Image 1 (cartoon, rainbow, N blue to C red):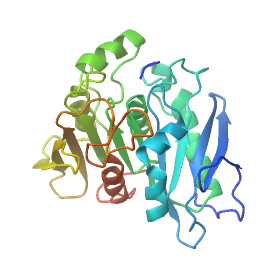
Image 2: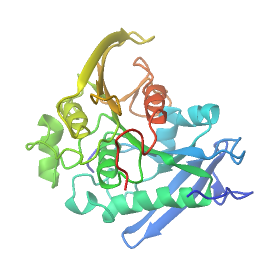
Image 3: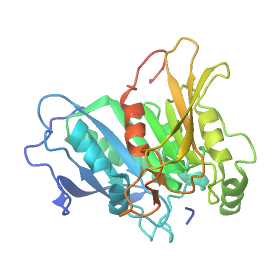
Image 4: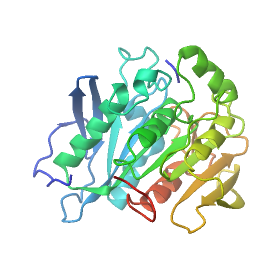
Length: 306
């Protein structure tokens, strides 16, 4: 893993890439450029602004591989939201990893965060997107990059999903990244200034990114420590046991969720086996992450999004 609302055009710009309703697009700025696939549900342009989800793949994956494994296109078609899948080229990282461990790629309007936020804004400008319902999620290095975007752009993203990833600021170099992946961040990551609703999935048998990183990602999302916790236990249809903890602010204005997958490794839970780094036996992370994200809109409760 190392390695605004606008009116939708009659014919959305971008080259069709084979997947139904998917377009190939590109965004660039002074920090560089990235290609991305954009899934547009067949019912777009019907008068109601659509939510947008930015999905960040993991190390060694491609955007299309990630789309297949997560089956997010199917959910987007079913529930009516746009999905952007940025692709990290080998020219930026030989392992196709987002550079979450470099200081220059952890800050607002710098490096990769500026590119990813820029392509998010590009979609918002060209399609009828609800600006209060823009989200980001990712796996592994993509989960770490998603946590960076959530911290750097709380005015842009309403909630974040982190699967098998790390908290923002967990490392500032390659060597520190390797240590953080094995043991968690040496120093406790900085907490969010404003509450960022966060859902975390992490396998307790993950030997690539230690499960302690999931704990740190959840802790980072909470600007206060006096939250209520409700825990339940269950088992997926595929037989994997899990523990879900819901953390809620005392007044109930916002919440975060942590899913611990018992026996789970470094893979997208409930994913399709045709995609890489998936575990079909686990609970459906795609569906649960989207349920959580869609339940939060920017400006909910006490959240200051200015």
